[in-house]
Image 1 (cartoon, helix red, strand yellow):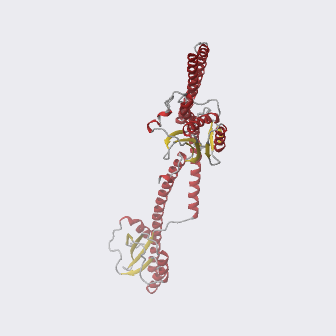
Image 2: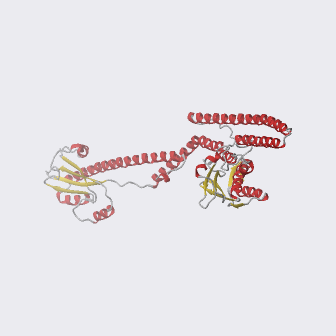
Image 3: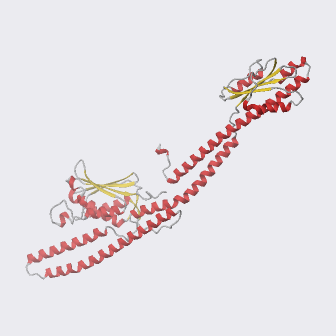
Length: 467
C-alpha cells in the first residue's frame, strides 16, 4: 500500500485533500438522492390523492351502470381502484398521513362529510399491484427487473354518499439514481479545478523546501551555496534562516582553519630549513646523513599533515565529469610510470566532483594497491543512484581488526619506518576526507580470493536534486 502513495509531500497533501473532497461529495450526493426520493414519493402521494378525489366525484356524478367503466379507465399498472361495501383500511387513524387526507377532503368540498382513511407502509422491491394481468403491468414489471429498490405502499379508503367505499391501492417506488452526464462532468471539472488549485498552492509552499533540500545536498558535497531567500510561511522562513546561518558558520570555520594551517606550515618550514642547513655543517659524515634524513622525514610529515588537515582544495569548483574518461586518464598516468592498472568502466556515467581532489584521493588508493598487490584492478558501475568504484589487488590484504583503523592518521599496517615502503600513514585518511567531502563513502574489505577490495561511492550528477 505504501508503494502506491506519492513520494513527495506535495503529492501526499494533494491526495489527502482530494480524498476528503470525494468523501464529502459522496456524502452530499447520498443525502441529496435520499432527499430527492422522499420528495418524489411525497409528490406522487399527493398526486394519487388528487386522482382519487377526482374519481370519487366522477363516481358520485355518473349513473351506476357507468361506474365500472370509470374504474377501468382510472386503473393503471401502479394504481388500482375498486368499489366495495367495506373499506380496505380497517382503522380510522392515519398518524402522520393527515396531509394526504386533508388534500382529499379539500378537493371534495361538496357539503358531504367524506371519511378518508390512509395507510402507508414500506414493502420490498419487485412487487407490483396485482389484479387483472394487464399487458402494461407486465411491461412495467419487466422494466423494473433487477432493481432492488424499496417501495412505499399507500392504501386509501374514501366513503361515498351511497355508503360504499372507494378503495385505492398504489405503490411509489424509490426513483433510481440519475446518471446524467452533466452531473459527472460537473463533478470531474470540480475535482480537476480543485486539484490544480491545490497543486499550485502546495508548489509555492513546498518550493522553498525543495530548494533547501538541494542546497543541503550540495553543501554536503562541499559545494559553495548561495544564501537562500527567506520566503513562505513563518516556519519555512525560520528554517531557511537557520540553514543560511549554519552555512555561514561552516564557511567561516573552514576559512579560519585554512588560514591557520597556512600560517602554521609557513612557520614550520623556516625552522626545518634552518635545521637542515645546520645539519649540513656537521663534520661527521654518519651523523650528518642521519640528521639530514631525520629533517627530511620531519618535512615530509609536516607537509602530509597539512595536506590531510586541509582535506581538499576548497577553492576548486565542482564539475560534471565523465567517469570513464576520468578513470582512463588516471590509469594512463600509472601505466606511464610502470604501474599495472586494469580498467573496466561502462560509458555514460557522469559525476559531480572536484577533479584535482578526487584524482588525489583515488591515486592514494591505487598506489596502495600497486605497492602491496603489484597490480590494481579498477571497476565502476551505477547502483541505487550512486557511482560505485571498486579498486582491488592480489596482495595479502589487511587483518580484519585493522580494516577501520587504517583510516586513522599515521596508522600503517607496514611496521617499518621507511617512508618509501610504508609511507606516512595518511594516504587513506586523505582519501576518506576527500570522498566524504563529495558526499560519498569508502569501505575496505578482504576479497574472498585474496587481496584487498576498496569500494568507493560517489553521488552521480543530478542525484538527490530533483524535487
